[in-house]
Length: 212
Ligand SMILES: [Zn+2]
Ligand SMILES: [Zn+2]
Image 1 (tube, helix red, strand yellow):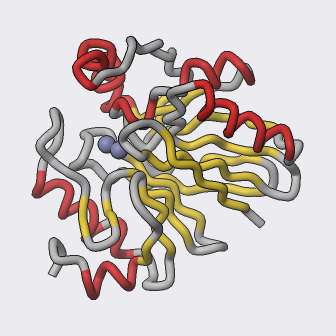
Image 2 (spheres, protein in one colour):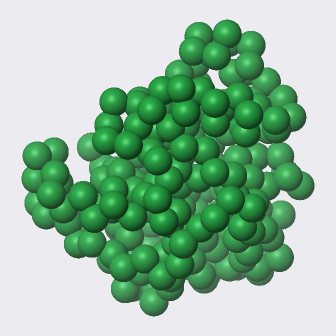
């Protein structure tokens, strides 16, 4: 059984997710830790629950989702994975970090690239990867069918969708990703988004003004 712990980090109020199961193995998704207190929050939770992080996996490479990757990678000596199409976005972060008020950016090395259909495993658990571009060109989502949830990044929010005005963003592509990928999941699937509270596929099919 996967447990999902969420943290809200950095000035963008980004959701960082820690997924773990009964074995204690854990994956860290989109670590956006920025200041010392945020790292401490994550590290304390891992330590207090005797967890063993095994991978860092990212939905995409915008600054708010990658701020903590390098430090966490070094602390636990674990690999970091991203879709190859988002690599230029990761490389670009250091060029704009200061524009957003961040004091520089420690760029992490990518250890492996994702592809659609990949499976991420930890402990007794697995996540299935969906390619959902539009907000970012190499955006992916992580689905667990047994427990019916998706860690969706910045694609679909409660009554909203990801912005498409950032480099590599495309509105039509985003809508297509939601309709042909996320909306093939059953109504009961919970969507854990990159910002704001969770929602469900069924609720968004009914109530999302961008998808009527
Ligand atoms: Zn984003
Ligand atoms: Zn974001």
